[in-house]
Length: 447
Image (cartoon, rainbow, N blue to C red; front, side, top):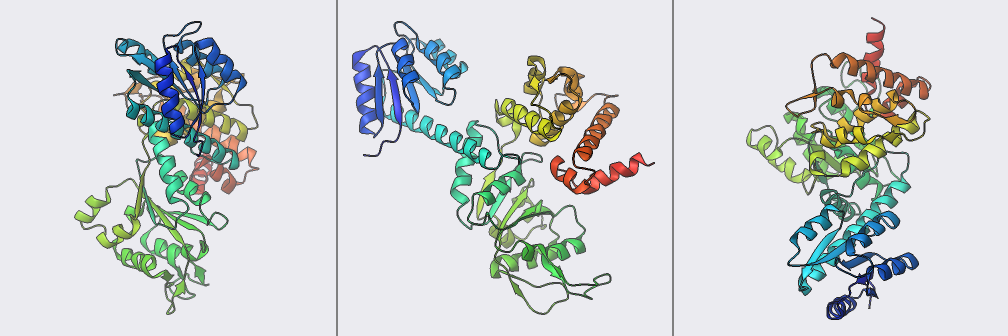
């Protein structure tokens, strides 16, 4: 029998304890039992468990005490609390205190199996996410263990090993390109290039040349043969960001590449075979774009073999706390500093902000805060857009705040440029912005 998990069950009622342990062992789990809260903590301290089931009412230490102790000693181990029907308030307190879930007495076997399976799966996915972050340390990584993100991790794990074409949807700034990069890193193509292009940032003719390439003399200025990004990404992944902005006249050629696996350079007569996985992203409703005649339905079918939705930050609960710490530490490292402490008052502002710009907005706010903070502590004043005030709860700075934000942003870009030895390409990669943005900043400084 496969041991699916090592579970500690703490229950002072012998009949309930026998039911729990019997069902769990029949499910293939390894089970350790405790008759009171103190014994549960002693066993947890001596062994390694994947899950704890604990009654709330127990001698020597209550289930809530066990929960708080586990959160301090073993925060990665989920705790499911068991309560009686007569204790609805205690059940709510359990969830509010950080319990992974709760079960009501008398124990329903079906609910028990489902709750245990769900809790163990979340622990596994969270552990897998931490492992992934350690492998690609220093790079932008997915962070968060909210239910929507855990569902997303599961979908990524399923689709990454395949060669399926993926459409990533979600609001601007939610992290669609990061999802695409993660799929690539976990695929069999991970040693080959990951090439990204923003389809909305290039003029029609330039986008066609960038994607498909051109031959020498194909048009004015084409002084040499140019390989397109499909060829550059050979063996790897091509990420088409804002794919809903691909011009209508180019959509037929893009469809042909997806169907036939070959491209024809502008001005060329021969086709070139390419072996590339395509991942695309959009914040548009492609169904509506098809209905409006701006997108070919057959192209959407080809792009949308598998669809992944990246949840907006407002749907991710306490992920904003973990993201704030992660982003503050990351940008401090860029500047050669130790990770700053985020004060309780600053974190309250972060928690309560609407974040209409999603993770990108949060990262920009933390980048500025890290650059301007003193003595290793981020205070409310280091988050001016959040501390000064907002309009309609949408996170828009009040009148008079924009110049301050512009100055802060410029100072931070200058520091990153200094850190990168004035290499604008490297600085743009660190900041996650286009090199031309830094170029424009330099031009304004010279005015």
